[in-house]
Image (cartoon, rainbow, N blue to C red):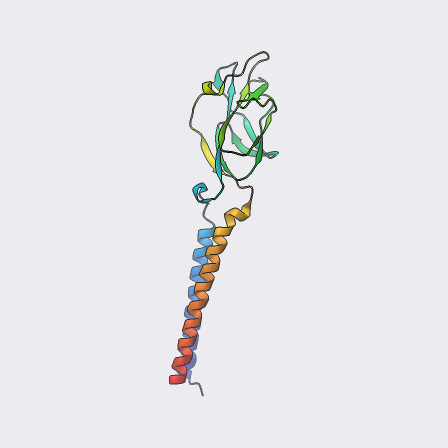
Length: 186
């Protein structure tokens, strides 16, 4: 027969295992909710979008649209992205000057981006010529992370959660085996 002391030992082991599981689970969840650093994401690349008005000879701030949706950012801005994306600029700048072209020579307001680079959208009055890219002013920009594939960002966290779960299961198994051996010996 099992005496009260042995039952109390089993409850203590179960309580310790439960607390350990909750503690590690909280830690893993806390780590998984932290922002991902771009340097840790495989395949991500940096992309800067600028806008310049040839007529005014100045940098202009215009809204940036990515894949048909507003990003909430204005030029100049740097994105860290994965995959191929379409970036679209408004047809006119804040002063009403029409879009002329991108520094790549593309004359559509939408440009397809597949590689890390700096892209400048030129605006200007009718008849104004766009500057070559070498004359585009250099200035600091901000940054954000935009992922086209959430699984690429989530996979390392799922692996961490799986490893933590295995470690907890192994710890509980060892404790249960030790308790059974102590019960048989006693």
